[in-house]
Length: 419
Ligand code: HOZ
Image 1: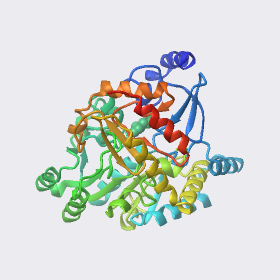
Image 2 (image 1 turned 135 degrees about the vertical axis):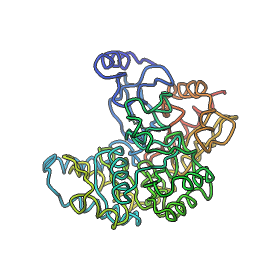
Image 3 (image 1 turned 180 degrees about the horizontal axis):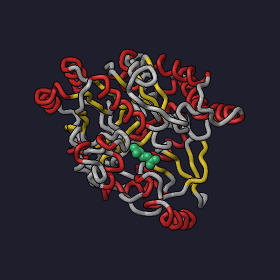
Image 4 (image 1 turned 180 degrees about the vertical axis):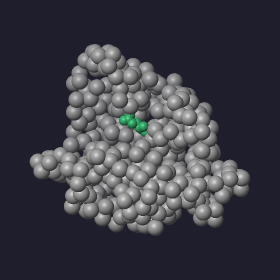
């Protein structure tokens, strides 16, 4: 496979952009080799600067549930852009997107649009502190909630991929406001509430983790979390930036039947354009400025083009709910092809091939993976035109654009790998 143009671009980029990329996992650091510079995408495939084509299982890290260049999204953005790219004033479409979100996710009674998942979790956390008058946050090791200072403690995604501490540049005082617990451990959660219950403002969790690879909650874990938060007056924040509109229209909270107090969304609600949101109980959301005194603002918040893309995607998903069983079945077919000795974990259309022979229920389990073998697997697939996440600690995503041919090509590529 000729990758000379990508290699030349990477060389140029490294002189100008830290590590040559604008987000760390893209740099292929943990798998080695040349990051592919992508020129265009269509459906489930994307083409790099050298003209190589790949079946894409990243989908921009989750947003592209309907594939690249989905016609209604392209049309909606084109139309919106023709009317003006940004106003810094409210628009009718923002109200429409808020209506679609609150209809699909009943726990979200009010919602505020922001620009990124990081902004959404940061704002939700500030709101939880403002509402409860408390300081501490409980998070789980291996979960990633964007690059919010206090939430980088024992984080997944790029922090786990690069094996860095996550707290360089974060004042110790901030890091100390975070209690990091093992995912799926009810006893650890009970002990934390026993010790700090009256100071805990919020528990934030990826209800299905995507950022240490795909790790589902064990039965009873989310239920215990809900019960402990209610009993101790802490808010439960579901970070559904990845799982929102991915696992079901109502996200993981619909799948597992848990009602959080606050939810963060991103990715799919922007159809590939930068948008995110936080929302939840109206009595809590009424504390956000200008309704209340917890401040949060943004020049490009509710950007017309991003909102138009989001509306096009959400409307399409609502009109075609059969997409969920279709993409779940496609993901299941891929997972069946996994090599022996590999632990495959899947929830709906997100999945991970963990190069370990034990179930992965926590970061401690994930850390046992053979990342060198994962790198070999990743390159084996890439050479055959199948683009999996360039990190053991990220989830892969199937979109509605992955047709039967693409799935079969993928299955063949996986089957030709020997562990
Ligand atoms: N942290 C993102 C995945 N969990 C990666 C974002 C990117 O590199 O675009």
